[in-house]
Length: 105
Image (cartoon, rainbow, N blue to C red; front, side, top):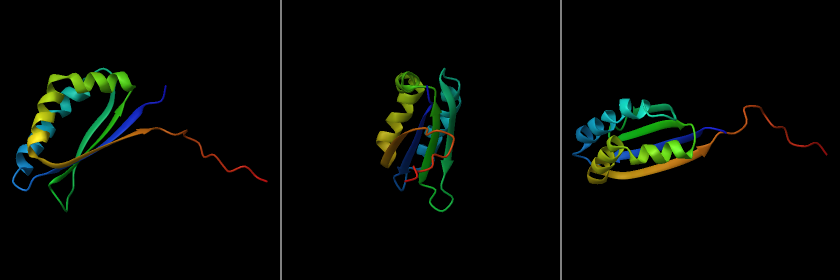
């Protein structure tokens, strides 16, 4: 089974950068300790500090579902709902690790 990758973009409301940033950071360690979490990283845009990006890797969909039911995730989601201007979550399957060349005719 291939791991699932998530890229989540979260933009804070103008007066909420600090409170949102703290809530996102508080989710890092407990999420990394969850079964099925392969990677869980938070980034902040150097030119726009209100823009945060999570880059995550999960073993499978069950691990993601369990993550979304965890108390630390729900606490973070509540702060995001109150303090984010926007939230965009992209979910990716990993492609094969070798280059596939087009068929020759």
